[in-house]
Every structure is written in C-alpha cells, then in structure tokens.
Image (cartoon, rainbow, N blue to C red):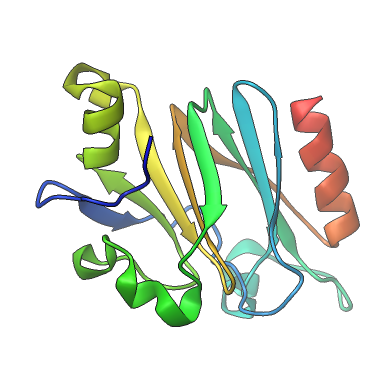
Amino acid sequence: MSSSIGSSQQDTVVLLDSVPSPTGDVPEPFVVANERRVVVAYRIAEADFERFGPFDEGDDPFCVVVFSEADFHQFGPPNAEDLYGHPLASRGLRGYCAHEIVNSSLVADSWGRASSNDRRHFVLTFQYSTFECVAADCTVAGIYGTGDIASREAYSLCG
C-alpha cells in the first residue's frame, strides 16, 4: 500500500473543523495503535484554545484523536517546510491542520470503490511529519490540560 502518491482529480481535501489544529511547537505527536484502532495525541495550537477551552492558567492542552476500525496508518514525510511536495498539496492540503480526503484515490486503489462508503482517508499535518490513516471514523476523544494526561488516555483507549 502506498500513501497518497498518485492522487487524482477525484481527491477532495476537506478541513476537519471538529479536530483541533496541531501546534508548530514541540513535543511531537505520538501514536498508540492496536490491530483496529489508532490513537494520536498532540499539543493543540494556541489559536484553538478559545474554541476548545476554557483551560486553566498553566495548562498545556493536548487532544486525543481516535481513528476507529483503522486499516492503515503511517507517519512520514513531508514535514511542514516541504508540504508543497505532497501529492495532495495542490488539492488544498494545509500545514498544521486535520483533513479528510473525500473520494480518496488511496481508498479506491487499495480497498476498491465499493469500500469508499465505509473507509475514509484522513491526513494530519505536523511540523516534522504528516500522518495518514484509513479508518471508518475520526473522533476527538478528549482535550486534556497536559500531555501526561493525554498519553494515559491514549494508552487506555488501545488497551
């Protein structure tokens, strides 16, 4: 299975407003996975604090995003600086955002057109990498005041 390489005119990039934007700061996102579920935790962008808060002073908000019934996931290039080279960049892929690829050529090519109704392609862009996942759904499990709390929640969701 390859990633979005070879994407076609059918690929439509849609921003997921229900998922907080990642920050450009470190620490880097982390992933916990089992055979059918992938959980990604990352620090949210300060621009989303008001929308997803309120937070206590001194909080360092992290979100936990769950990809249910996941068939495929990967972290890899490009990083934020080289995002223009991603095959979906010309279709609207943006840095530090969560996206869904509607009519995904990756899903159609790897799982068949009939699977397009129950397999969805998601892309999260971070400072040092891009995360792609094919799953049934993407939901925010929660937003937490620290990375430690978020990591414990992420592990519990895959346990």
